[in-house]
Amino acid sequence: MAVFSEPVAAIEETVCLTVAADELRVPLHQVGRYAGGTDYRLAERLEGLASAALTHAKDLAQPRLAYAAHPVVAAEVGRGLELADGEWVWAPTRVLASRPPLLVAAVCTLGEAIDQEAKVLTQGRSMTEGLFLDAAGVALVEALGQHCRQVLVQAAGLRGLYCGCPFGPGVGGMALSAGPQLFAHLTAQAIGVSCNPRGGMRPLKSTAIWVPWTDHAPRPGDEAYKCQRCDLPTCQYRLTPYLPA
Image (tube, rainbow, N blue to C red; front, side, top):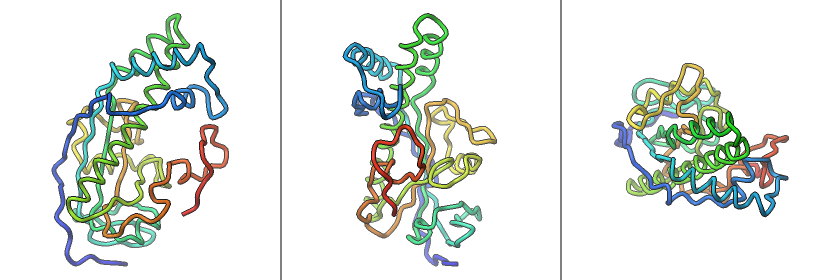
């Protein structure tokens, strides 16, 4: 077990930020991807529908993010990272090897309006419009997650640290049921997000991740697109091949 004798100062109070929806860049092919999978190709008439859905989704979205950084006092294979409050957080082996002095809990959300509008459309006579609005929302929340990472890269840089590889409930080998533990380490209610005991979040267009802040500069490939970090062999949404670490 590695023990860290001098914990780095934390940001244990939750930092909350509002993001302008126009800052989130989403290409139309991403909307098509979530509407129909990797092999789905937008017909010309549907490109207009996808564009309208993305514009509507941005009008409805209320992008917000929250994060809090906690000192790591120990790392142990099989147990994970021990935080200053005595909690052990499971972490992938590559994260344990980096011995991060801080572990950041982060949550971001688009709010509930997109899901509510998509439900109304799909239950009415506009199922296709509802499908594309929902797909645009998924693409937007992915873009918001990438924006959140850049915010954390800048915040880490101010402390002379670097962002390591993120992981979280249902991502990177962590069980979805670990969601409540992450939510216990920041005030996600401040941006309107809650987590049930099984790890499900409300609003649905929300994401939650742990991000290690390390002393080590990123290695080649650490900034790879998420598909390159996922080894699921049957994913219909895959855009690029798996790139082993």
